[in-house]
Image (cartoon, rainbow, N blue to C red; front, side, top):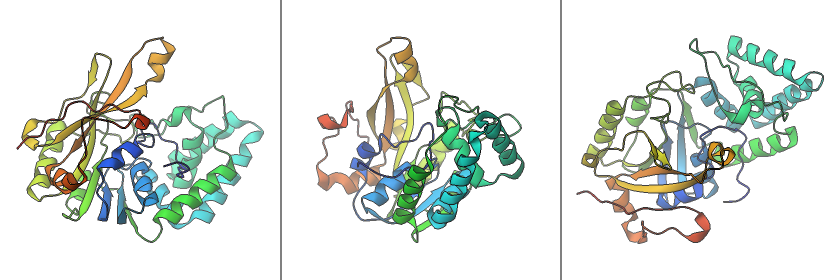
Length: 308
């Protein structure tokens, strides 16, 4: 999974966990659907392995969804626009960043968003209560070099162009399009950290509504994977999904948090991955040992519970 292109810096991206998550993606799926795509790391990883025939990439953050579409469908123009903006910052990079941020908030031009994501602190998307992007620039760096960005954009376009649908809709509307031959991967706004409001999306999702949506998918025998709750040390984030959904739960080791490292604490972050019953049925022939991780994956799979 080395050298997979990723033009969008995005906090919370599943880029690093993608090789592990892909262990639970069956081969030759018709379509991969990401209702909460973020940087579309899973779609990109699946496309790099040529596992799916087509893709549906959705994110409620409209400029982000539009940016992904521009990267895939207009790579030359998008890369050139980024290079021009990046080159304009060298007289006064901080003033330039704030000007681009102001222009973006006024116009919602997704091409401006790419520069902001490359330059803002930790690739962390943040909005104020009025829906204005308000993240500060990283003063230690100037963002991805144009040559590198161009390579990443071209790479993603090569993987996804001609076989991807883009949208910016409510996740429940997207889920109605799923078919038994598809696979849905969901990484919703991180509950427990965001509560009912996630600054990446202007609003979070309601836990009970999400459970109802999963119940509906179960009734239609839709295969899906959910990244949801997590823990760090003794602290947990978010509610577990209920046993009544009949899911297989796996804990993935996501490494030490930057905060724990700064404080000198030996706290490892774990994220839960849930597999639907329809999916585990498809994976049965792979004879996956859910309790054991391959050493090179640097992950931990805790005991799995299957529910009838």
